[in-house]
Amino acid sequence: MKGEVTGFIRDFVRDAPYLREPLVGFAGCDSPMIRQLKNAVMPEHEMPDDILSDPKIIISYFLPFNKEVARSNVPGRYASKTWAACYNDTNRLIASLNDALVEHIQEMGFRAAYSRKTSQVSNDVLMSCWSQRHIAEIAGLGTFGLNNLLITRVGSCGRFGSVVCDLPIVPDLPETEKRCLYKLTGGCMKCVKNCPTGALREDGFLREVCFAMCQENKAECGTEVCGKCAVDIPCGFLMND
Ligand code: B12
Image (cartoon, rainbow, N blue to C red):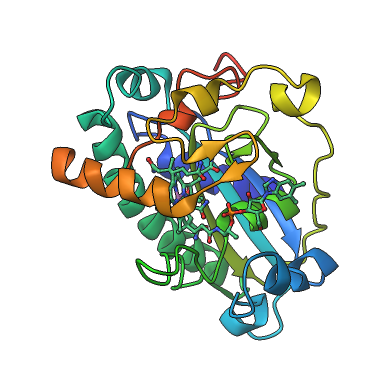
């Protein structure tokens, strides 16, 4: 069944011209790490059974951008038009993929649903009640980098989505392999150097400062993005596909 779900996701996004092949991981709804999200993120973080009764598995997927998208976002202080367009396109793609995946799972004779609370709570609370990166980490898709992004085996430059379901699937285990050069060697820090505002620092991440930069970009390119910490870094792309 893992192969069926993974194949469905890969086929669904195959024609998106700005993506590489997706990664898919499976988190067990009874993992103690899921319960801990109320502490790690916030008390209002949803639990899988807020989304679907008697849930078994969270399907988490990573949609990696291609190199052209990343390269477009390297020069200058502001996000490229291509980066902004890909952000908007992947938002739509994630929504339609989730709907199609739910339908597909129902056709397989099982139940599925997804969180509707994936945006930030408000401009004052820059967190969501369903943290895609934390879910992806539990589903074995990657480990956190100094850039504060989840670094998968194909890199950190891309987007995450997820669907809760009751498919009888054996969960994947969280990865232990660190891929962030700073965490491995104390060196690199390219993401910190790329950050145009100092939001990303060696000693932490200032989300309000990052958000202010995303808003500055909105005035420039119409979309609240930035992404300089996801491009022109050694961990943006880790496999040559
Ligand atoms: C709110 C939000 C923002 C806010 C606040 C950012 C933030 N860090 O929270 C703002 C607007 C500033 C923002 C900016 C960006 N965002 Co944003 N954002 C979100 C959103 C909606 C919720 C994030 C959230 O609630 N985080 C929860 C808090 C508690 O987590 P946190 O601040 O990251 O802190 C945790 C990690 O650092 C982690 N951690 C760090 N090191 C380690 C080590 C270990 C061992 C562990 C266990 C944990 C850990 O623990 C911290 C505490 O829990 C998600 C979508 C979603 N629903 O998840 C997208 C999301 C996180 N954003 C994303 C992206 C791409 C961006 C930008 C690049 C903008 C852009 N698209 O151009 C920047 C990057 C900022 C950065 N480097 O983190 C992607 C990340 C993809 C990836 N590869 O990781 C997401 C997942 C959207 C998606 N669907 O793919 N974002």
